[in-house]
Image (cartoon, rainbow, N blue to C red; front, side):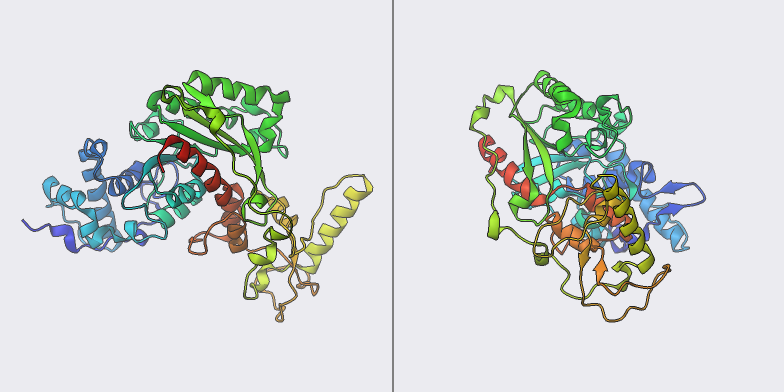
Length: 444
């Protein structure tokens, strides 16, 4: 029997961000009650026996998408598709244009992967790009933020599952995989935050979700990333607690190390702590693990001009005279009080400060770009566009500072893009470090 849905053309754009009549959203915690995550994970892991065990769920997801698409296009809903017909499509998804946009993405998984991994607190997939570059296949992703999910889906063809604290979300993790990766939320340990650590009930305890997954699934190894403030939080007791829990979960942990992204090919001063461990029964001598040596120092170190926009950026990135004056007065007040807070203009022949979430990340990474000739504002501003050439870095420049290729799609507004890149990992540093881990495991 011919599959009636074969000629359907389902694109990601066919799904609205929100359906007001029932409140169901494509992105965020509900995300069609996980149907988009279920479907997209199935499509990329169709040969996995565990996905076949969810046959009824996958049929429901596909049928739901077809019906929602027809309703959106104001077509009559055809309910005469049998479950067998829907499943016939699900078993050979790549053969149908129905799912083409899930596969025609900038960063597809390797056809013949060398190892598997899961991407927790995935953000926009910095870990994923690093590990895919080394031959790995992501078999599960989880990310709570709706806008980050949107970016993730556009670049990898996969919708991350939502809230990892929910048993239902964790239930989709495959039983077996090689590496657990996660840049677990860092605000609780950040030097710039309140530094509550495990006392922060909404963020600090998310580490224990990682511990639970390690205990239950026992992957060969893990790679965790966090802010350098974790190393000194509570006089080192917080990190000691984390390492003890990882040890009790069955892992030999390499002494953590703080690495700086600017030593690994990107012009950004970004220090992060890396925590790496191997399952004890593998008998791996962790003293043989070596963190990568700096790849770029001195004159060989990349400079911001290497990632700077080649064309003149939009006038919207140039500061208004009123805003610039406000920044100058704010800085002067802090200088008078003996503080070092305030805006900073980066030498384009130097490296950027760490890009972080919030206005401070942008204000401490201003540059002088005198190429602008048309100072006509395109947004509402107070005053006029400054004539000193002072502007913010663009989202694409932030992407490059984290090592994201230019083929990476930025599909959200600037405010969300800055947040996403500020929260991400520096891909080159991650990739060089995990390469050494994978070599010790014999996976590459």
